[in-house]
Length: 233
Image (cartoon, rainbow, N blue to C red):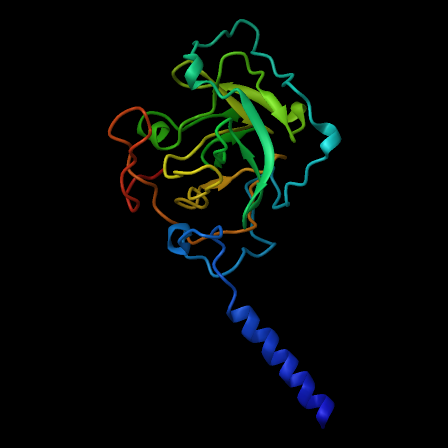
């Protein structure tokens, strides 16, 4: 009887620990800001066609200092100011989420389900692009660390500018992220997801679907509105 009682006690403790799982927001942040997720997403959450719900593991030997992507013949695109160019892409890890890709300022990059990866297509324009600033480029050759350079390319946007892509998916930041390493854009409208260094969705932590912030009052992207907007992107 004693062994059986011990088994029940162990099982009960395990169940209690499961119920007590903390939210998957980064340590020190308000879980409510991340959808108040109770626990990491299940491993079988579906990814978009052509992608898989992997952990984004990176082969360190595959890193390359520059992308091999070249603009399409005859397509020079529109030049953007140097301060708007994403000059580096870094595959790294952040608290609770794990594998991510960051821009030069350490902000996490995202992919959008309404876009396309084969062929690459960027559909986030106008007000959408104010909420989700695209990772722009002029030469398509950012400095790369922790990412296979063969996965990095470009796509021409509706305004003629060029945007960096990873495994075909256009890359964006989110104005709702106020600090480097934040990922409040995860699962916004059920369409935006943190992208891994291999181009897949990072589904390690999947908060409840949330609304995007409103577009900023100006084009600087520094003063985003409150969350809970009705924007569809």
